[in-house]
Image (cartoon, rainbow, N blue to C red; front, side, top):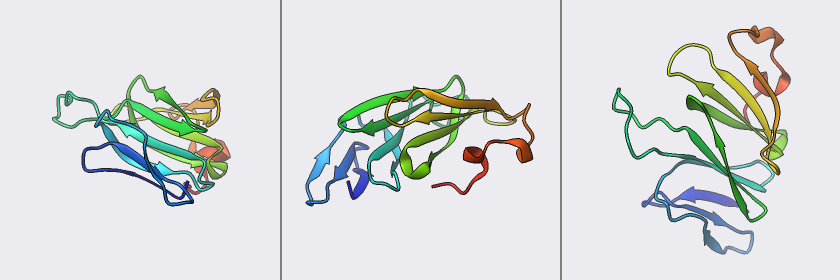
Length: 137
């Protein structure tokens, strides 16, 4: 894949190396669509239908498209940030409340199985794993 994007209706599309535009979703709820550095994984946040108390629509789900399959990573709180690790072989999330410390988790992009996780309140920044502190991909 050479490009991933959300159309005006908030559906996810990918563009292949041959230029073919393929629509992946029809749910009309995609935000922050990203293509991994290796071009193998597409991710997007799922916008909830109902806003929170502060009026914002905070995402709780991250969808991951890889090798023709779409999976979901869900957070107990909201997804405050997400990023690729190792060119897209892994996806990391920062989940929690709007303020204060949360939980960072690393997933294998192929299986969506949890690889590593830690509580930000318990691990000082200087002792966090490389996938948490390295430049975001």
